Amino acid sequence: MNPISAPVESLEHASALPAAFYLGQASLNADLDRVIGASWQLVAHQSQLSAPGDHVVDQIGRVPVIVVRGADQQLRAMVNVCRHRAGPLALCNGKGARALHCKYHGWTYALDGRLRSAPEMQQAADFDVARIRLPQLQVAQWQGLVFVALEDDVPPLAEVYAGIAERIAPIDLNALSFHRRQSYTIDCNWKVYVDNFLEGYHLPHVHPGLSKVLDYRAYDTELYRWYSLQYSPLRDCADLYGEGEAFYYHLYPNVMLNILPGRLQTNRVVPLAANRCRVDFDFYYGAQAQSRIEADAEFSDEVQQEDIDICVAVQRGLESGQYHAGRLCPKRESGVWHFHNLLRAAYGRGDSPQAE
Image (tube, rainbow, N blue to C red):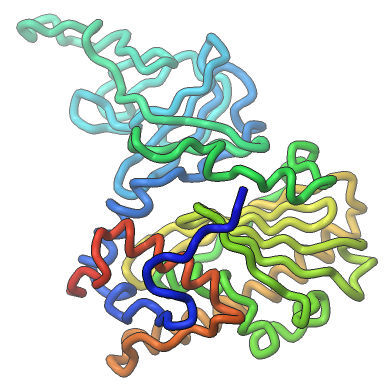
């Protein structure tokens, strides 16, 4: 996959997004509808959906969704909203369900989303169970990860993730197994967190420990159509990660893949409010010694707390009324520029919605 060609505003002349993009309900609504709700979203790992009836619940933008392995072994994604009066079909992840039962009034759906029964509806005129079905959504897999899209016109998932598996070889993400999830709720707009991920400019100032592991002089960024890659040789960490490179992928709009030898960490950044988000970290390992896994967890928590602290401080700066849009560093912030131009295209105009 060839690197992306430059959008209209050149990197050498680029500025960051104005503060209004990170403030207020109108900006959040635009993100939920035009960004999160209009893209592939990471919702599960295939190991969570291995047998018929296994299901995972989530929310994409404003829409509750459920992903189910059917009796025919097919994976389906559907709206998790009963066609009767909007009750949920499932409240949490589960295993081996034979059907989906609305938790409000007990309407029962088959695993493929067809309504099977509706209690006490015999007196409803022209009511035909066979005509009712849960809305179907797009679902696709890549390297064991399961994604859902609300809209039909998103680019194919294989196109979005093209070239990554080949670039990281011989690392094989399919060979890694899920180990644990760690979630953080952070008092900042979700885009503040993504912006922070997208550049190594802050490494020497915010991450003293990580700066010893990565070679800042060799740290570089590549841009592609739907993702950016930051990478660096590893150094002085043979006991933690071994020899090789660190690959930090950002997949538009809110998925990160942190890939090191024998280890994958996925991040999904979920907007909760205009000034609050949740970041879900899922850790996957190969045949790692337990001591390395424990050391990785401790190191990851340290780096994450450093990122949380600076992102919260940045959000305060954005809310201060004293910031508009600063110039970007062409050498170090091309990933931020790339992300902001994709956002501008999604919003459909260069200025943000009016903050409320």
